Image (cartoon, rainbow, N blue to C red; front, side):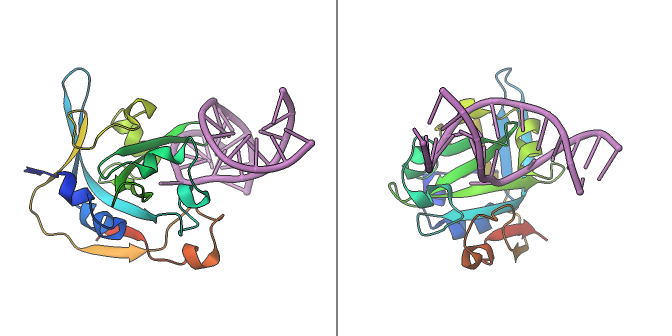
Length: 168
DNA sequence: TTAGTGATATCC
DNA sequence: GATATCACTAAA
């Protein structure tokens, strides 16, 4: 098992999103217990030019994290009850991120975070730290693309982009 | 299909 | 200050 480092995340978000499929998301609980889930679905949100990206209207208190350097964790509360997990990619000051949408045995971004006890406390943390990280088992994976979901507010053009990546 | 839930952004 | 909106889920 190889732990993914800064260099992995310091690349264009489309590439990172694709490469994260099939990797292992590892969570260390305060109790010390380790939980591992295999990532089965991701989505890329590619900066201010992408109207589906939270940062497309510019910097706000909430999107500030997206402007941080690669490997920063971006977590926010959706619909008042679901924590969604993202990882910042690319250069600092370039607000792009990858949403971890699902793992094997944990379909849906909200369920995934619930299963791993992930909450807003981890927001702004590092994905290379000791609370949450991602490992590569070296196994080859087949990835298929699809349209992103839940972004009806974005431009038609952006809604049609195949920026969702799934384990085949 | 629809209700539930609360932070955030945007508008007074 | 108020309200509209949301990268969702569970129950029916």
